Image 1 (tube, rainbow, N blue to C red):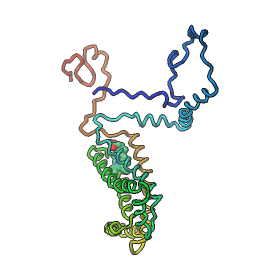
Image 2: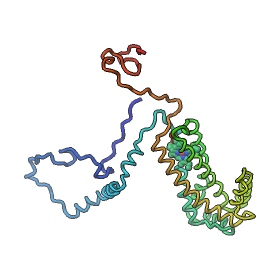
Image 3: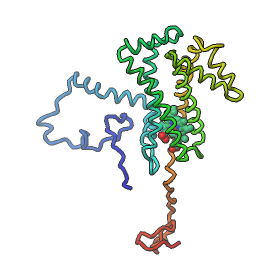
Image 4: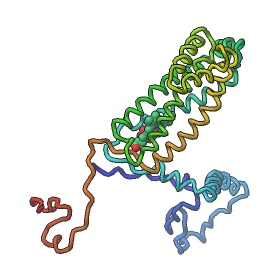
Length: 309
Ligand code: HEM
């Protein structure tokens, strides 16, 4: 397979301390010898305004360099963005990033919905109607959040399927699998707690069914359904509890766990597809063998003769 060259990073986005010094003669750096016509037409002196303009142009790069010197962020970002991926990496490897994107869409649209939603048993339904009918782009943002929830659930299952069928749960990625399982449970919790929030007939009765199903679980089931119902009947306290779980508790836990998940993905790298065979390590052959036209690893010599072992 031909080697894909790394993209060249433009100098303007590389912080000043990390930039390679330009060679003499290139990019306006003097070569040591003054050009012969320098005396006849000396360079124009920069005005104060021009100097300020140049400084303003450099300002974003200087700020980046300032932050970078104090955080070492560019080393981390370079390692993350330019890391090697195994041979055979394909479109199925984008499902994790797609899930992440779906989560970001849910977080952003959720923030805007929370500005207009009222988590009260008497006003929840009318606040959703207000979002859909009166708030500019309200119906669009609400629709994105509602359909985005299903998209995220579908994507997280597809991503889990990919990691399972590619054997990515095996050593050394077991911990990332376990974190993934918790993320899956939290994603389902988001979908379940969000369903009650419009507080219409459908969400009310569907949540009763969901809470009762939780109650059938072994040992913790009854405690879990009592905790979710937050009272003898589904009502105002249930709505308040679901809302706080939906917009504070679980999103916080998901963000923290996605951070840990991503750290392990970058640290351990991704798994190669199971049908890609590992290459034999290249061992240096003794000089005597090389002289005789024999290469290491028992591979065919470069002159096309058959392997020796
Ligand atoms: C909010 C949910 C999740 C997000 C945002 C997420 C994100 C990601 C991303 C971006 C990657 C790297 C790219 C890739 O391989 O697709 C990844 C890898 C991985 N994920 Fe997830 N993930 C989530 C849930 C899960 C779940 C439910 C599981 C399994 C139960 C899981 C297990 C793994 C494993 C084992 C890897 C390493 C893959 C490899 O080495 O090839 N993740 N995840």
